[in-house]
Length: 262
Image (cartoon, rainbow, N blue to C red; front, side, top):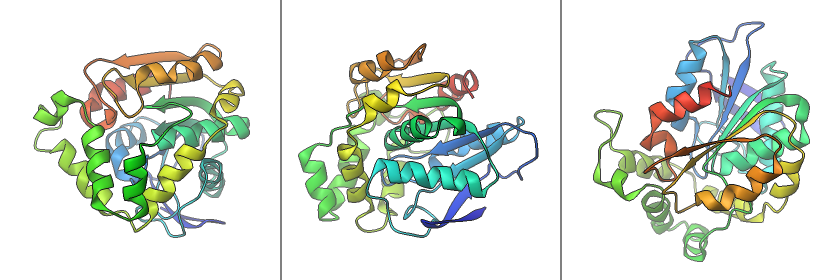
């Protein structure tokens, strides 16, 4: 599905199901340099279990037109505009990494749009390694290598994929290689520049679930604690022996966790 917004025409994956009236909705937001394809499993599951699904390609990403946004709040506004264009008044907002900041911002600044919130592989502030930022500024392949290598636990790098026939790291590598020039740099700068995460966390009014990997070195589990403490009654799902790429490393456990909040 494609929708028109002030950010351009954006692509939305619906889980291969048309939206139905009077169904609850769930919105998925991807991380740096990625697109809706990271959410295929949960998108298809919820679309087949009574939900309207919006898995959004942010502006300048995937199949969406427009230029990449320069701030997290702009990305959040793009998400809200997409919901409006699709006729979705409120939804469970699910975001991974950069996408978790986007959904946090959207839920805080547009509380009527969020009936629940799931933050996966998150922290705020979300710092970026200087080498990663420098490589991204030059559209150097090194930034793709770093995101891929640091994005998986050591055990996941050895194999053992729960999705038979898939190469986890290779899938991430190829996806990031498809990103347009400068997109990864824009995304990393937006993450690093998002300074209102704690304030936004304090403004959350909906049920919230944190899903964190205990071997995540990009957003270490301990670094999310201030966000957790700031959101009243937030729940936490800690996944053992799991890195930053939770959708790839633990697809079944992640889906089970999402079912409890969505």
